[in-house]
Image 1 (cartoon, rainbow, N blue to C red):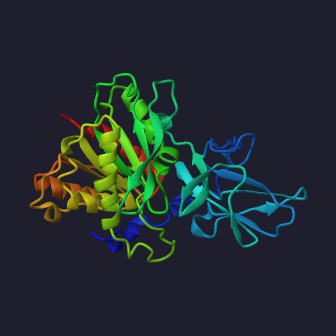
Image 2 (image 1 turned 180 degrees about the vertical axis):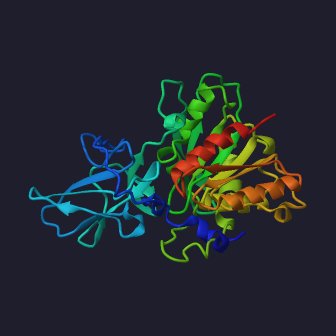
Length: 375
């Protein structure tokens, strides 16, 4: 599979956060609370129990403001100016549960919402909002032992620079100096970077909670930037993407550095690669090119494998393929059925009522993690 075949799956991630249904006939519950991602002391944006989002921006000299979320693709939520100079507005319908990127368009210019935190996505720092999910307990911050997410800088001769990665080490890593761990190399999506899985995805909290619940054996997660050059956003931006430069960074530079710097089980049987969206495309390409390095493959809204492309290669221990129910679930289910029929251990997962967005991928990691590194 090359980049052009995956483009329909990718898109700009924040677009999936648009309101999917109009509920104008329903009353809007007046129980709005500040979003969990608000800046300290900021009341807006707010979210209610039904999933509506409400915004309030102070811009007394402006003539128009709209928010990129809401209205089902019809241009976002238009705010109304009050006599006090504040612009307010509420999405026309409830948002999908989970995390969404968004921005403001003020008099034609694009700006972030000063009331909320920013997250790197869509090739820029975007505002973020969280619509509480009914199953959010699995990625909630709880009173359990926590692992550590640390930044590392590793030398890259191929790019003539030092590159950054974030490494999750599980609770207890620093105590038992004799214990070694398997490693999952986990890639972000198009327009995001190596911060995404921790900040937007809560990968560390998902792992902490799974470990505390005795549902998985602890392992290390490594997250690095999946591009070796600056790619400008726009139609066709990924058509010229070549996997070889990043493959060199990952397989020839990062993996040896991690194995030398952390207590890893440095063999194929204890190494996995997975990624969301574009990161799934990268996982697909690299695992096919380097099957001797990875025993577990995971594509999260990132395409499929076929028996023909896996034929005559070392068989992986597991192939995991997932997507949201609003994406292309039949393609995922059919691909896994075909792989099983060809003798591969394959698992599908479909996240209910989500699209190409982080709740899909949080749930996917939660389902994938217990399947990894089974002896």
